[in-house]
Length: 257
Image 1 (spheres, helix red, strand yellow):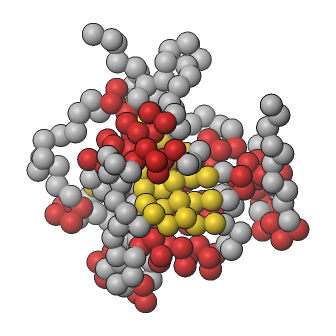
Image 2: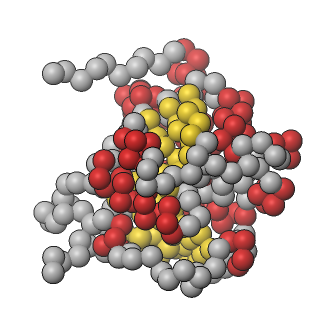
């Protein structure tokens, strides 16, 4: 059965995305892939804010947002998709308003709920790609396990104080050497004990750091959707903001016991 034709770009979209279209690696076909893509973003907070903004600006056709929180004053130091006037309203609604003002070609699907074991599979199954910007280990592992189960790629990131990291998990396939792609649990087999790693509310975080990692997550998503470049599969990108240093740690599929 033939795949459906990609959605055409309107004259307005051709002008809007002109700087993408002139890139040989992206071009019109790549922009059409972005328009056809359905991406789920978990969390509309520090990481989710730049992810949502840059995916919307890039022309990703459908962006789902999972978040059950409301905007508070302390969010605004880093969650740049929200505004002072948004304090007290749902983060999904605030994010949708920001996207509408930025690019009304993008459809926002609001999932004003917390990702949990009962809804995770049904939420993720409707999308092509999931980006995890959550701030807790329970959600992070649930998102990774569910993405693997429903066989969609995952871009996952984390921040704390002055450090951040991100990686890409593919649900199947092999690398250039024929090795099966590793999973999130090959990198982090189990979450740390409760209370061992302080939350951002407890330890603090520089707002601009979330922008760095969230923007890198958006970049990885764009690469996956358009099929360009080398995604961070089997590689954990580490960022030390105080040292202005990026490092890469490679990891593989754990051997079967």
